[in-house]
Image 1 (spheres, rainbow, N blue to C red):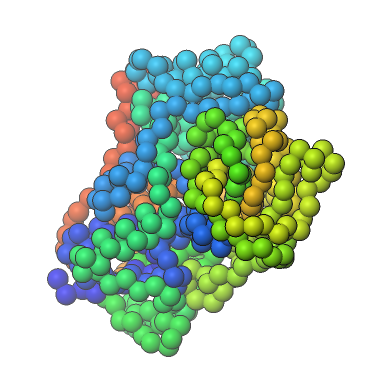
Image 2 (image 1 turned 60 degrees about the horizontal axis):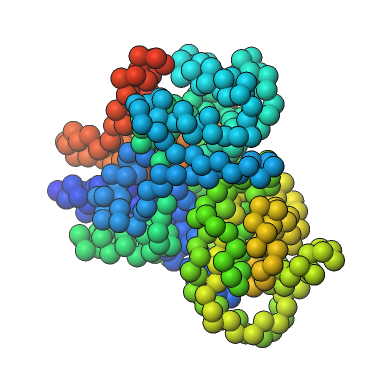
Amino acid sequence: MGSRVVVVGGGLAGLSAAAVLTQQGLAVTLLESRPRLGGRAGSFLDNETGEWIDTCQHVGMGCCTNLLHFTRLVGIDDLFREERELTFIGPQGERCRFRDNIGPAPFHLTRALMGLRYLTLGEKVRLGLDLRRLAHARWAKANDISFEDWLLKHSRSRDLRDRFWDVILVSALSESASCVSVSAARKVFVDGFLSHRKGWRVLLPTAPLDEIYGQRLTNWLTSRGTTVLMQTGVTQLEEQEGRVSGARLRSGELMRADEIILAVPWHRLADIVPPSLVDHPTVEAASQLKSAPISSVHLWFDRTVIDVPHAALIGRLSQWVFARVESRGMRVESEGGRVESQTTVPSEQGGSHRPTEFSDLGCDHSPQATNNGPLTTDRLPLSTHHSPLTYLQVVISASHEVSAKPRAEVIAEVLRELGEIWPAIREASLVHGRVVTEHRAVFSPLPGSEAQRPVQQSPIPNLQLAGDWTRTGWPATMEGAVRSGYLAAENVLRRQGQSVSLVQPGLTVSRMASLLFGIRGDGMQSRTHG
């Protein structure tokens, strides 16, 4: 085939589209404005430790069938580990092991839910009834009603909302029940917990995201003939006679194309589409999607401080903690430094913006420092530290309040919360710490927002849109991003005369879940070509 396909954007949506089109034999050029691939699923080099650190911990789930297919396709599935047990820590420090039991879905998590000791027996009964009602909530207005309003109608337990519903929703969607539509909430709980035994299982990357989606994927693509150009921003798409003819680069060069897939964030869409689309209702609606921030607190200690690889923390600022016990030795020069630094990074395509804040705090977290008041915000002189360190990442989704707080205050509060659960943290020295906030981490699945999400086929025939913000049937997740890339690629192939189904079906719904809850395998699996 002679068609030249240009994919603009090297996040998961663009990468998945480029990968499947490459596999189908098309000539693909991938353009990414940053020096690395992966988009929001990326890493940064921490200069203090010399380590590549993920901006935020990304996890998949067993129900993410397209993400899993993509990792197998490009040979990176060996860099993910399936977790079959989670730890939930209640408001009073109650430790609860969350794992499945023998039996078909939806009964496979009975022991796990009954084992949440910070919920009363009455709340657990109410939870079971509400989950059953939610499974049946397939009415047309489910996209337009908040999950909070739905809960108020069926369950008036504020504790149940705070200690279960919001814990899962904020982790999955970066928004609480008040800011999530019923359909988005249903997607999380039905696909993730009720339909299939493996749907809930967490998939953790075992290497930095830059290695997974950067180095390994770059090698896979280029070895198969795809051209990958990084630090190559696009300022605008050119249009001739009702078709896009190419991508205008920041250098001024026009990269001509027969087909273009625009895989950039929703808030960059209007800047890059041809002038004829800037005021189009599709672009205007997508550009008005609201965003939600996610913050991560990165901490390095001089010793082992926690006894689990990860845990969900209930009723705290800190929501999830992930540990890597064997961190590499730290190399820090003896010097003072600024407490806070604002890092401006290139936008996904063209220009620059500040989606991420990097704030550093080097301090001594000895018991004396903790007991005598707030931690110092000055980076203390540190000698070169060669011994292994314990690295913790604390994830705070829907972190609106974090953005408004001084970074030292955020770290101090996180340390206090962790120290209440793991006393060893109070005895350890905090060698290094920093806060990273992605202000536009995901779009918010607000009631009514589904109507703002465009299909992949744009109003211009040879221009496709891709991104987790497009209409995929999934909320803002890695699964949604990959689905969008596959759907956009299907449209390109169809225009080449190939009718190829790339989107993978969801997990097969268990017969018991179908009989009891009326769950069907159709869910949100429909094609969204337009």
